[in-house]
Every structure is written in structure tokens, then in C-alpha cells.
Image (tube, helix red, strand yellow):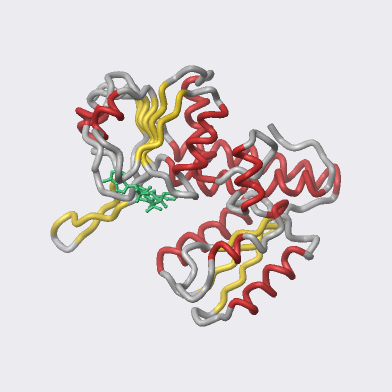
Length: 293
Ligand code: NDP
């Protein structure tokens, strides 16, 4: 293996420590406690795990955690009323609606009902527009985590060739916007891209956000490139067991890349840490205080 491992777990622990420091200072200097509300509709097992771990880490950094668990058959009006009440609750600085929502609910409508200033996931149409136009936005947590690791590894990203594989609203598109904001030359690849291996081979930075286990092999990677693997895929590990892998074939990619994030332990832990950081930012903005760097 030639690549250095970008240790997202350690990086996220450092970011959570920083957040805890900001939370302590807000309490000591201003009597403020940032609050994060998470709304979960239904009983999707993966979502339940995420929500539990978000609540736990929120409390660990000293913030208030509010959980709203609603039945799978909750109607739109009831959910919108919950969001409306959270929008008006001064103890709540961040609101997150756990996706995916059950099919009978319109995710766009629900997300756009969140006060953009409390939209710590950065999915509200106002925040999408602010990010796209280079204005102060709430930035989606997963791409933000990727960017923080890239900045820490490279310093200045200006002029680098970046290829983002995947064009979803929650990862691929905002990731591309952030890299553009860093003055990378950005290509967004997707399922209709012709010659994906050739496109990926141009990249100094590859961000894979596809959802297909080990789809990107090492021979697509330019020697020395930095590989950020967003994918989380569960595969059969034999003997009735499963294991998590990314969208990148780690072993072959690590043999050529300059640096790579593992799965698990790469992008995943950074996502929740960035959610906590965004909640502190929202609290500072709501109270007219300077926001943390
Ligand atoms: P989506 O399914 O919304 O998007 C997947 C994207 O990959 C689409 O744009 C799709 O293209 C593209 N794609 C699919 N097949 C191919 C292919 N064969 N070649 C090239 N592109 C392809 O997924 P998400 O963006 O929500 O998530 C992506 C992955 O990241 C998943 O594994 C998910 O679990 C993981 N994830 C991890 C997070 C974390 O915290 N680490 C957070 C969020 C997601 P098209 O648009 O043309 O269909």
C-alpha cells in the first residue's frame, strides 16, 4: 500500500472536541446552550441507528438534544406542525428531518418548511441557492466533512482536478459546489457518463458518492491522487456475516492513491461531527455572535 490513510474517526473526534469547546464558551460567556432537534418518521432501522447516535453525540458535546419520533403513517399536516413549532422554539437552533421519509410524504415540501436559519442539514432550497452563489449558507454535513478532510490534507486545493462521482442533492451536487468554491476544476460524473474510468483517471481528487460496493478499482485512480469514499454499502462477508465497504475498492485503490479515506472510519464519522458544528454555527448566527471558524 502506498496511500496514507485519512483517519476520519480521529478527525471527527478532534472536531467534536472543538465543538465542545465552543459550546462551553457559549454557556460561560452568553448563557446559551445550542439545541438540535431531530425528527424521525417511521421505523427504518438504519435511520433509527443514525438518530440515536446523533442524539448521543449532541449531548456529549454539551448541547441539548430534542427527538421527535412520529409514526410511519403520520400525515403531512401533523409533520408540518411539528416543524412549525420547532421553527418557533428559541431553544432549538438546528432542525434535522431524517431522510428518507415514508413515500406518502413530500420530502421537498417538508425540508422547505424548515426555517433556513435552522436547516443544519443544508437541504433547504435557500441554503442550496446560497451555496451555489457563494454566499453564507448552511452547508450539507457529508460534503462539508469531505471538504474539511481535503483542506486538512492538502491546504490549498486551488487548480486541482476534482471528479465527483454521483450527482445527488445531498452529496454529489453540494460536494461539487464546495470544490468549485475552492477553485478546483470540477467534473460531476453520474450513471450516464461516458468513459467513467477515463474521467476518473484525470482527477487529483476523487470523491465517490454512488452507493455501489467497490465500484471504483485502483486502475481508475491517477497515481498519487486523493480518494474520498463516501459510499456505505453492506456486503456479504460469508458465514452469514456482512461487512461495510465503500464505493471504492480500497485495497487496489490504496496501492496507487496518495491518500484515501477508509470505510468505515472515513467520511461517516465526519458527517455527525459537522452536524454538531453546523448547530453551533446556527446558534451563533441566531444570537448575532461571531461564528466559529
Ligand atoms: P444517490 O443514490 O442519491 O445517488 C447516487 C449517484 O450515483 C447518482 O447520481 C447516480 O447517477 C450515480 N450512479 C449510480 N450508478 C452509477 C454508475 N454505475 N456510474 C456512475 N454513477 C453512478 O446516493 P447518495 O448520494 O445519497 O449516496 C451515495 C452513497 O453515499 C451511498 O452509498 C450512501 O449510503 C452514502 N452516503 C454516506 C454518507 C456518510 O455519512 N458517509 C451520507 C450520505 C450518503 P444518476 O444521477 O445518473 O442516477
